[in-house]
Length: 97
Image (cartoon, rainbow, N blue to C red; front, side, top):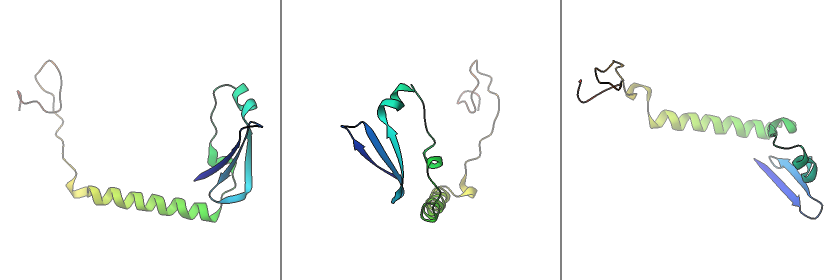
C-alpha cells in the first residue's frame, strides 16, 4: 500500500510505503520523464517493515484460502486430452465424441 503527495508547482512526488511517513522516496517528475519509459520495483525502494510483512502474509493467506474455498481440489474438472478427427483439433468435439 502506497501513499503519495504531489507538489505540482515544483514537479516533485513524495512516495510513502505502508503508513511509514519517516521513509520517503522523492521523485523529480522532470528527471523521471527525461529518462524515457522505465519502471521501478516499488517495494525495493523502501526498507521492509514488520507491519508491511505481516500485512503481506495475511493478504496472501486470505487469498489462498479464498481460492481453495472456491474450487476444492477434489472438485477440479478432469479433462481428457484426445485428438479429434476434425480438421481443427479440439480437446472435445461434439462430432467425434
